[in-house]
Length: 565
Image 1 (tube, helix red, strand yellow):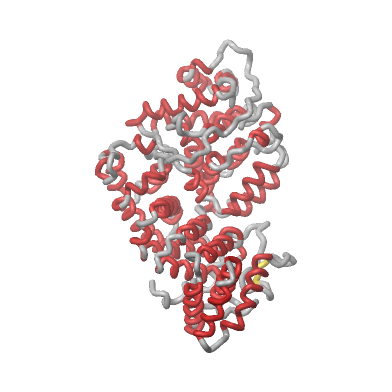
Image 2 (cartoon, rainbow, N blue to C red):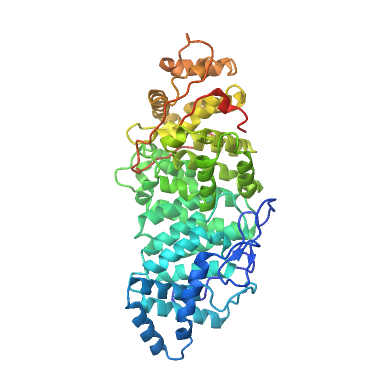
């Protein structure tokens, strides 16, 4: 895209939209433009933002220079300033960035499409910025990433549009470091959110990628994350009848199918979660031949050495993919809840979170993303595990109870058990499978229905998830049980195998599959405090996939299971 192209703009009132544009949330804060800020909107009585003030100050230093009619004088003086040192260089770049993001916008004025004059001004300012930058736009990208990650929810609409415009210019210049900004923006595109602002951002990012495929193909990590993101969003968008969403859905289908056909080798890094996502779109006509080839003739996918779906199953999905499907705000709230809130005091935090992120009808699909994030991305330290802080299994149980439909509940349970199915002791992480077993054990006796539901679903996965790879699934589940008992997460399966709250058929199945871990001669059901866990696998490894079938550390003490949900 030429540097002189028009500034990216959305329909008035759309970019600022976030989850809840179409569904009012009782406790959601209302952000309004602030008279003294051209960047951010604020909650009434909120203190002025330090980053906003700093950027305003840096812009004020160079504003008189930018007003000069002599371009030569502007360039000369700015070059002299950036030559004084790294800090001075960063200050000039950030001052110019502020000018680009707020071009021709007056504090407190409503958003409106840019005029030709404002477009020309942005092009001029970006040209000046490119001429003075000396660090391959590193300073520029650091500030943009901070605004995108920390301030996106408060950025005024015209600022969000200008960030996308700057991104287009960087990609047009083939700046590979722009990948980092893409990753930050992708995290702001949430699943289970059909609000105008969320759909707008997904559309803008997809447009940039489809217009610059050759640049994208030089960045395999960004390509894989882009595929992962749009595969996850497609089921949400396929369920919508809104014209803008239908149009976006068709573009997502075109992008994903082209990527899978042309660059499947680059997609393998996603690992097993690639198949988990593909099974949700397998019935879309454009994906049917891809799914058929992947299952029945994997060698036709064009990846050297790839000949069996099991090769994906045994690859653990890197944490960065799992985390990318949770916004920074969601991550912050969940990490706070799992690190600082005492067990029994979490209800008000759960209520706030559900009101903020799970109130809309379409937001139910987000639950699977959240369960996967809690299991795979939040690994508490030994100190937290030994404390009375709310454990992960309790949050997982609460999230499962947030599901209103059987289909979404099945997807959430699949997300919970997915690593169980293909667990490889040498490469997988015990912390990823710990919440499921503890949720089953600690839900007894008060929430036995949760235990029964999870245990029954695990057996359904074993029998029906992928009949062609049933032996692999059985080995994965067996390896999960072996390591969970061996490491002391639970001392045995006795609480499940002997509980009168579990139907006889489920207990008999459990005893038949894992007789060594079911001590039937033991005393009646009781709970054991498991040993503290450590995280033995810090290195991130690749992850694997799944086939369509179902749906579309530890703490001891019985008292802690009470009143969880």
